[in-house]
Amino acid sequence: MNNSFLTIAMPKGRIFEEAAELLRKAGFRLPPEFDDSRKLILEVEEENLRFILAKPMDVVTYVEHGVADIGIAGKDVMLEEERDVYELLDLKISACYLAVAGLPGTKISDIAPKIASKYPNVASSYFREQGEQVEIIKLNGSIELAPLIGLAERIVDIVSTGQTLKENGLVEYAKIADVTSRLVANPVSYRIKEARITEIVDRLAEIIE
Ligand SMILES: Nc1ncnc2c1ncn2[C@@H]1O[C@H](COP(=O)(O)OP(=O)(O)OP(=O)(O)O)[C@@H](O)[C@H]1O
Ligand SMILES: O=P(O)(O)OC[C@H]1O[C@H](OP(=O)(O)OP(=O)(O)O)[C@H](O)[C@@H]1O
Image (cartoon, rainbow, N blue to C red; front, side, top):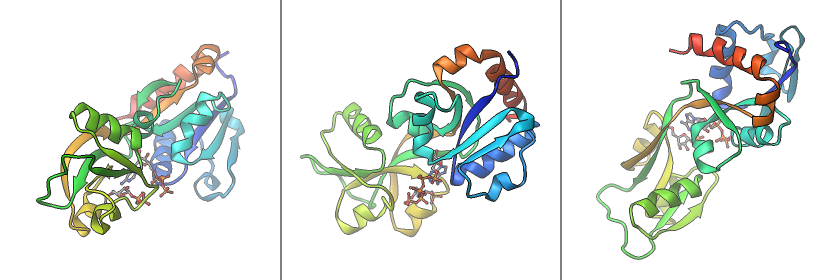
């Protein structure tokens, strides 16, 4: 049925605003309270949609487990953790990239240099591909602090404007991957609710620049 009820996992935080704007541009009637509510489940009955608001890193978890049919997640999250979800569309919002950075004019040690990151798997794969054996130190934020205080020789982190690197006197050594937000789907939901999901993909695809 083309009008089946759908649950969408939305990332809270910096992606939320751009994602909501995109949905509205595509003609979805989202109520004003959608933008500043503290509620974590929001139903939009006239659209037959239910939104759940999750941490950006957790969106794919809800989708993979099928409690959300579709979701919006950063490509960085998909690169960090391999998940059983379909990537349906590049929404081209919240653009940034993953990069290696560190103090200027420094070479990394030959033996097990320390690399700090919120993305340990991305960091580990990148340095393995470069033929470098490194020790990964997982941090949850303020990654740029690590080389400044001597915890790590390099970091792997998101760069957007470059302001955080600049203000902390760090430089970029390599770009790893471009990042934008993606529309993802649970494989079973996709099979059962294909018409409805395809209709949403088409509506969004039409307005993406
Ligand atoms: N400058 C940026 N820094 C971090 N993430 C960015 C940036 N620009 C776009 N993004 C996207 O936003 C997502 C992270 O959003 P956000 O920072 O709100 O969540 P978070 O990392 O869980 O934040 P926090 O833990 O600080 O609440 C990333 O997965 C990425 O796809
Ligand atoms: O290039 P810029 O525009 O400066 O953006 C990049 C910074 O933004 C993110 O941090 P965030 O603000 O999410 O804080 P965090 O350190 O707590 O993760 C990211 O981890 C960088 O530190």
